[in-house]
Length: 137
Image 1 (tube, rainbow, N blue to C red):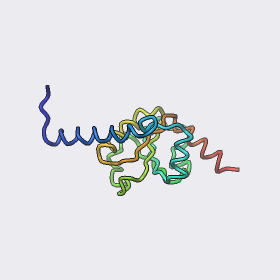
Image 2: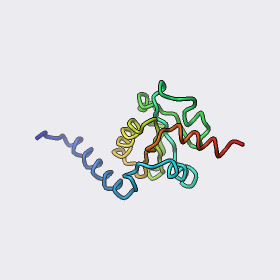
Image 3: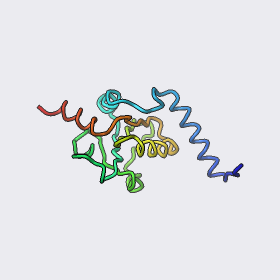
């Protein structure tokens, strides 16, 4: 069995705490398009679009004008750490194409102590389409 350093033990403890918090959330924090829109509209969730640049179809969430949305590509995410909310209870919705990279970023934010982190289980393009359908015309 691996012997963990003090730092690694603390990370594991934070990870375990995050899992316990996620058990209280429907879908362990993975949400559908309807819950995502509710988080944005009613809870003022910060939206982090972590889609890789080469996978963005049309507009990313920020370009599409989704309120509180930021385009923070997964491969460049470390450059955006300073942009995260200071309030670690602020709802955060992480989106991408297939939730793969979004779930990786969620794990990081969980370990950093953010309490209300959610992942859109659908493709971000559906969130963009829903936003445009409700704001245009």
